[in-house]
Image (tube, rainbow, N blue to C red; front, side):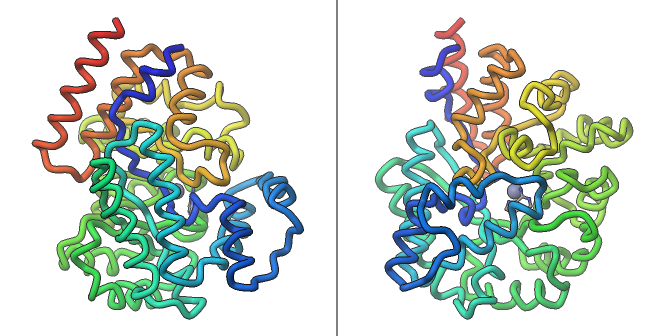
Length: 336
Ligand code: ADE
Ligand code: ZN
């Protein structure tokens, strides 16, 4: 395997929860800074708790971890740490998800977390030339009313937000629950994405497409169970932001070798590789590329296709996509 090649490929990360990039070391540092008592005695003990049986078992720990984020600098530090890691992995563009309701429910307003994240994204643009977008996610286990209130509260920061998304506990909370909120977001000029088909059934992917009018499906791996849905995803070149290490950690697949990513790629689905919540799932985006290539015996040309898909599926303008795509051509020509 050619690790330098995988690293050098220009990659866009399209499915990254910034709160899921909070490493245990930073959790402990921030807990100490703010005098927060943690349930675990050490970094090692906290990391040892990252042994999940499903999505909910992860979310419980993920929301508890985010409780140490208390001021603007904390959001800067978390975001900056992610951006440094992403840059080292060859990420040239990132579209980060953030969960306002995780913070507003604790009494933190948009004026605390938005500037912290934005300052880090601006610094990455200046220092690394890395471009970015922000995607505001609604927690689907909460009510439609709460999502509307979140959309309203985000108004002063509208120019910083490119799209809205939908995350948290999937089963029992179909995309249709948020049809009206997403319609309002689209009226405001925002794009839309949604988690669907991670643990939930293919019908949730249909709803995300038909009711929420999404530009991409986050995860979407269960689409494979529905041949008509697969045909539609292929015909519409609908991107799936797949997160292989996440899927194994959350027991969607028992092993990486059983992952359906290669089958979907072979069928012509526009698959991308992403890290989801890298601090919790054992690897950032390059590690996802590496382990996927090794487990599924993908060629360098297939890895280049995955990188190119990520660029094409991003919200970058066409001219910037073309620059990254041309670089992928050069790297692939050199490698073969
Ligand atoms: N929030 C953070 N990671 C998530 C995931 N993989 N699925 C749903 N909600 C999430
Ligand atoms: Zn996710």
